[in-house]
Length: 286
Image 1 (cartoon, rainbow, N blue to C red):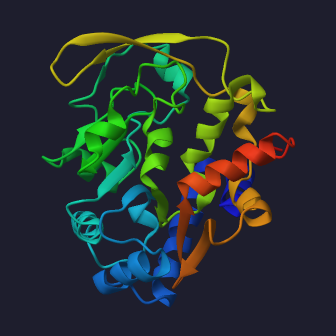
Image 2 (cartoon, rainbow, N blue to C red):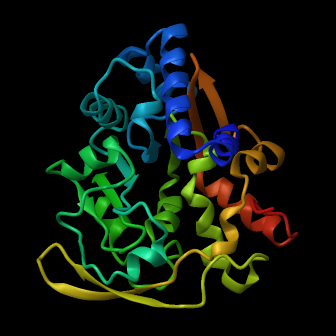
């Protein structure tokens, strides 16, 4: 991921994407495709996911060299956690910086806005069993037994990832956070301790401006939701490096299987570590 960012800085955007596509073709040529059985084995044996678990899933289907369709991948995840489990997916609906999106004054329709973070969360959003939180910048999709419990109140605080958010609530359910085709660079949970600690966190991670935006809720009613956004100064960070240097692999780790990126993290234990180290001025930011 860090190499990719370096190449992006050095190459014009057109050549960067050409180089990325060549690399992905090379990757698929030298590694055997993952099967549905392989994915099930990774989830159960390598990640320790079991029936009844709450799982927050980060993913990139494009980066996974797998024969299964995104629909089948979602089915496999549902089979592994079972009817007593719950799946969560990040469901942001824009790709630009949050403040740029909010300044356009476009209403966020929680019923219709497609997810901009890849195929898997968008397919999850379209599931008839899916629920979605109404937060305008950090919306979460959930499928499963604890969906309502996790999503309610997300939008009642100006801090997107604080105690009222699914990020915090999922810790009470011993949630695991997983990455399919991605590294911990995509681990959005790291912002939860920041929002809970607020001024006690040693880095200023939220802007001073409170944005107000229109949200069309599940009943078609328009509501005004107030929120802070990420401060521009936190763009330089190294989550994988922080995890590798400061977190026991039993709590959070990146790993590879046949050239594919994966990660697994224990939300509750990782939160404790991030909070404890923040009080010593050790963070993901550099």
